[in-house]
Length: 582
Image (cartoon, rainbow, N blue to C red; front, side, top):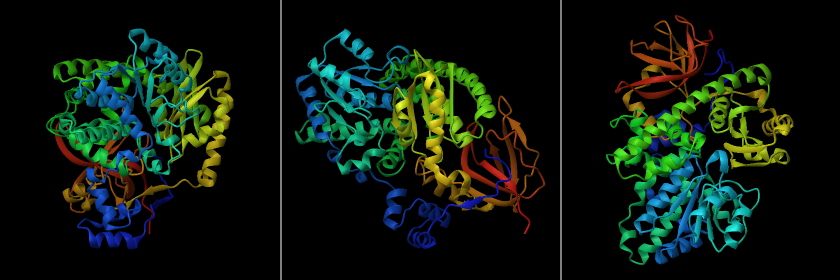
């Protein structure tokens, strides 16, 4: 929750004429029309595509560079029963990418062996260590890398010299391009202008496009297995990876996630996801939202990759047996609890360092040789949100400092790290989430350059930080109809943030109450002029509690919560201030 007494509160700009035109042409409320206009939706047609997306809005997958070459490779694997190994990253995007491709290939009688790097001893991606493990088992005709491989030029060259064909499907930006003979699907390194629109896709989104192209090709050959395969049922996997990787939830990603959430909330969830939901205390009758994916499901899927071996969540997602999947899910849950304990200790240490040493910095860079490199990415995300600053947190892994960075205020971390790259051993990722490796001796200099690059990127914006809201709302306007319209905007994420509403001149109707294990959250009730009461929750707001019996302005999101299986509407407070006297 932000600081009290914010003065510079402004509404996000929009063209009133567009909002009014949408209101006249669409059967929806004016607040929703304003929010659409703020998201640069200008016409009835654009609004309909946004609010009611269809799978037919997806582009032809063959427009992506090298999809045709990749389809040829996989078609030969199927036709000649070639030996294939799949290597995927240990995060949710990698896990779901592996699961999706194996699901499709199994339909055609192909059973790939899959490998996930063991973080502590093999590092990230297609490393020489994981290649050694792959080739120690058997010889392969094809190696496919998913959510990694773009920066593995030497390793790709080694595989090709050993007669192994390599296919890379990745969305990370390149430092060194793989050899030209390699088939690589990555819009970020493509010279094809048509690929620009696909730069918003994560790796599992690209794998979905590849599988779509493969099935279309085989259907033209009258392959009944391809004709019968319902690829749209795998959009649950695409949704998990897309939300976990914080991709822009517009365009094709919005279509993926809109339909993927329907699959996740359908009657026939895949056993692995059903087990994962049960371990996360998400009941069968409860709808999954993107917040559940971000804060309940993905941490569990990521936990093994951070601390142990990410093969476990892949096995869970591939399982056709609920009891087997449940065994995996319980183990993931225990690993996640261990991760939480480690994260809590590091967070407390890191927060003291920030407040003591770096509170006035434009960006945060933290390092401790005793911190576990597998959990620092979560902490960087928390600090980026809490402090509204880009944040990089580093732990130790072998002889290097390794960790993750998360963006804030729309800052493109790829651009920022480009200015600092001479100091880094390795780096990569996408604009909102990056990973870096650096020699510990270079960290102090890196911190200075990183801060300078952020200040340069923002220019004078640092001196003009504003608290923005979407729409000014009366408490009594929050009805069931309003909530139904608000849910049409979901899923929320990058480029489609959850709307923030301003409520003016309201009073707290009871004494605020702290809650949570550390009593760091606060809750209280508001009452409107019709005595309708509404719960307000201030996450991490117990140190910043607004007064009772005093006119207040509150900025908040409006949410439907489920407590003990009872559904209700409440406000999540972002900030508050005293109402100014007229």
